[in-house]
Length: 147
Image 1 (cartoon, rainbow, N blue to C red):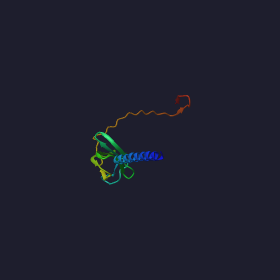
Image 2 (image 1 turned 90 degrees about the horizontal axis):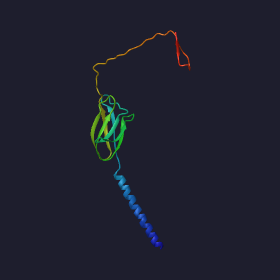
Image 3 (image 1 turned 45 degrees about the horizontal axis):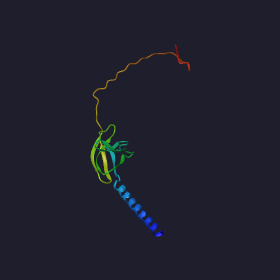
Image 4 (image 1 turned 135 degrees about the vertical axis):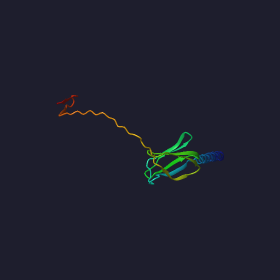
């Protein structure tokens, strides 16, 4: 009787071990890859802080982040084909095709300043100027006395 119980426990432990090993293999195969790089100004080579960086597959955004104080970014992505988009106020947006198969370091990405000029600026305004010699505001009464 004891031998049968021991065999049943050993068989159960073996099944649990095989199931756990299969789950570990499945999780490791679906592991994410790291996509990283640095974004700098093309003219003076300074790091750009707060650049929006996103990975897209078709119209769907897969991952996104912003650059840190040193212009560095890091994204997680599954293996596949993506478009990396970088956008920053005052700079021309960048879009580049990217094949991710393992950890990918893109090196330095340089962004060019956007040059847009306004042809004409028109400022209009009306001003009402009122000259007051003395003004008293009475608290909690809701009205003013001027003379």
